[in-house]
Image (cartoon, rainbow, N blue to C red; front, side):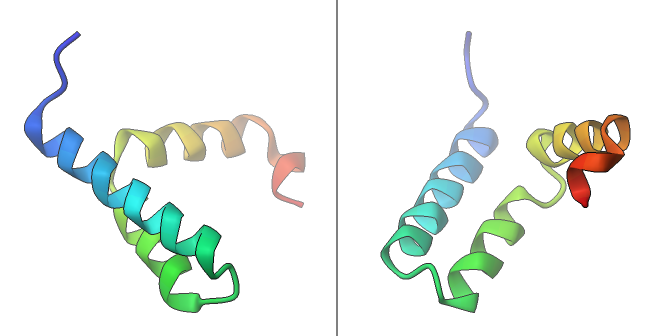
Length: 59
């Protein structure tokens, strides 16, 4: 399976955001960095689909 360059870059940015979050979980910047990298991605679509199918999960 070949990953497109844009998807690979997005994954690396997400990984960097996760590392920053794990180093400093109280930092709003690290949370926003993760959110920015997930936005408009296949992962965001999958998460939205999961939350719509399981509304109790969001409570």
